[in-house]
Image 1 (tube, rainbow, N blue to C red):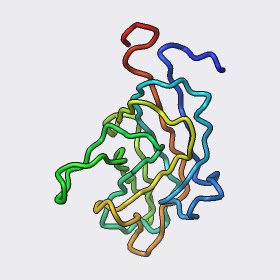
Image 2 (tube, helix red, strand yellow):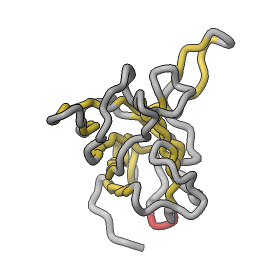
Image 3 (cartoon, rainbow, N blue to C red):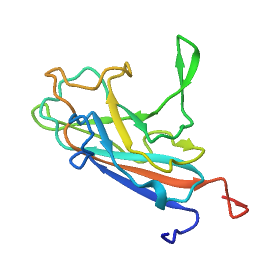
Length: 168
């Protein structure tokens, strides 16, 4: 096993050009394979950064909303009209930075969205990233129907709680 600096911290880099063969082929719905067995179990807080390439047809009336499924329950709840609140895989939103001629880069810095906590991390399974419109049900597209451009996303995990008998 790898020697980790305490508290345990690690990053997972997700590149939309290096997705699983089971991925959808749409940058708004990417699946990545990841071997979780090298990561010590425990409670973790997670934040993320995201940097997309230029989207050629920026024209959109909505902002991208990011959801992450790692087969572990996050500390995020979503209000609902059906049963009050449900566990949500929502982790935050993306900003738009406009460039010349209606081009835009979508991004999120590590401190732009609240941290999400996980009671434990998975021992196996893929990582799935979905980007929706503000309604949280329709995959994000521009007016012209384009998906998001390629991106790199970094998930930053830091172990919290009690490690080796000490609270951190």
